[in-house]
Image 1 (cartoon, rainbow, N blue to C red):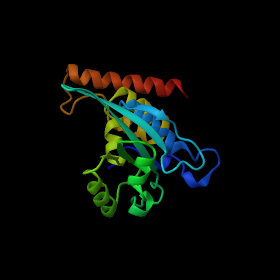
Image 2 (cartoon, rainbow, N blue to C red):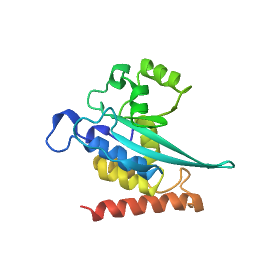
Image 3 (cartoon, rainbow, N blue to C red):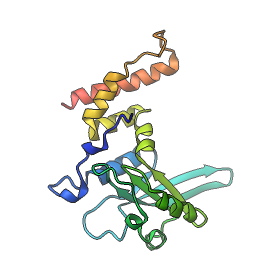
Length: 196
């Protein structure tokens, strides 16, 4: 059962000043896990990109910088998957914005048709999909992720924290690894309570 309810973020097509929330969450999430934000979300014609981020990869041969075009799709309210028609002209969009890769950032998941399309692009460019499960998993494993989850998904994150008390499954003394997780929960919960 999912811990995070993506429906806590308003639908993008409804307006009312909160239509950019999912893109802002995507930006904050990507920054939280280590990407550098090059272009923030904006309103209006965006040429098929919602965000541009870079990633620095270090290896024996030096540094490689990957510039990613990020496309955000928020369909949690309908539960629909992201289809190829939702992600038209990926190759052209990546090229137009001088990027090396494509990140799909989805509150549901890619349809099998889109997954096949993205898989075929992996011969030409870098491709990553962050679906609801990958996003949730990353949010719940660090104090920074928990703080972000509490900011954008306060109700479901608080419920998850309440159902996952800080103790191991055997009710035995928390070891040093578990202690770091306990501190993450404690810090995130303190931050949340302080923001009320």
